[in-house]
Amino acid sequence: MRRRLLSAGTAGVLVASALLAATPWQARAVRSAQAPAASARPAADGAVAPGGRTVTATLFERPFTSVARECTDTLGPAGYGYVEVSPATEHIRGDQWWTSYQPVSHRIAGRLGDREDFAHMVDTCAAAGVQVIADAVVNHMTSGAGTGTGGTPYSKYEYAGTYQDADFHTCRHDISDYTDRADVQNCELVGLADLDTGSEKVQAALAGYLDDLRSLGVAGFRIDAAKHMAASDLAAVKAKLDQPPGYWVSEVIHGAGEAVQPEEYTGVGDVDEFRYGRHLKSAFQGGDLGSLRNVGDGMLESGAARTFVDNWDTERNGSTLTYRDGATHTLATIFELAHPYGSPNIFSGYTFTDRDAGPPTGEAGWTDLHAEPEITGMVGFRNAVGTAELTDWWSGGQALAFGRGDRGFVALNNGDAELSRTFRTSLPAGRYCDVAAVQGGCAQKVTVAADGSARLTVPAHRAVAFQVEATG
Image 1 (cartoon, rainbow, N blue to C red):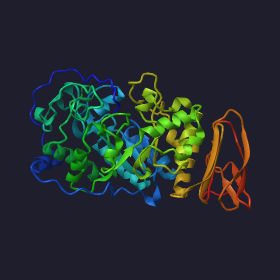
Image 2: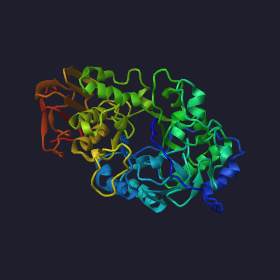
Image 3: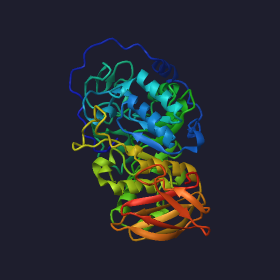
């Protein structure tokens, strides 16, 4: 959830209606409200993709039926391990993308599809070897009143059958001081009703919602606006799940001098590392590419960091590269997939001129970054090199090259002129496919000599990469 979200909840008057029939998660929430919390479980319990596939693709605001097709046609064959999907919950009405982040209930009844669509997507993706991560909005509800996308009436602090006024924090004004922890975690994020996540009742209701998604087969969750909830509250929700909680990654935007920092949330699971994308933007837009050798310095420990070149918030606020940066954005993504720091998340959204615009309604307008041949080739590279160490580093001007032990090698040229150079590698002699070629497949090949050297010609704003499992 972006900090400066433009939110004006759907206007309207809450009409009187009978309480909705209790769903299983609601019934269990009532029973659990007074029960002691269960012991905490491991952060990534039950969320291991097959074959060591570690790369995630975030298909932002993509309908569930479309995600299912992408799993079968692109994500699975390319070797992605996970796909992150936008919130499934019923939400306020409106065409803007951020309406998905104002939930009205915990039912699967949003614009991206219904419960049947969601379940079909999870099953289809699993058959393709791809596990689903659900974007979960658990910090807040809406900012107004009206009727949700699934027909549920609501007002800002009243949600039939789910939450009432007492379930929200009593600070009823916008966050104004990010150096004050209580203000950040108890007051309202751009006017959105802030759930009291320290409440046993609220924790149980949220756990029931997440349990329901787990019952449909999701591998885990991206926790939206995690920074605005105490890490101990999230740990308590996680502990209340009846099922193994799966993989968790928290959205915690780093801010210098702020009271709440990303490191606090590593005990709950992984954390989205926002500093990473900012560093890449600086380096690839005229900065020092050589500084990327130790790109994680000053950031989260590699095993707790989920990296990204951009996401839907940062592409709108300008803090990172975006699809509009073309080849530079692609090069930064190739670097992310080649370098060992963190767990890569590839963001794939849609083109826009209005920053509030919602997703396309048809097949046109999607950026489809996840399906670009250079990127799918590098997903295979990532899988092939595994945990191999960083070796054979070289950098000069707007170019760099490095190896991953004896498993792979990559050279990136961010300059305006062709780069032709002999590089030292640690790979066995042989012929290899250039997996970063724009043509895809094995249209271009690289030869490694007996002494491990490779003469590479890298076009301007392109990359050459090869790995031991893709030979010519």
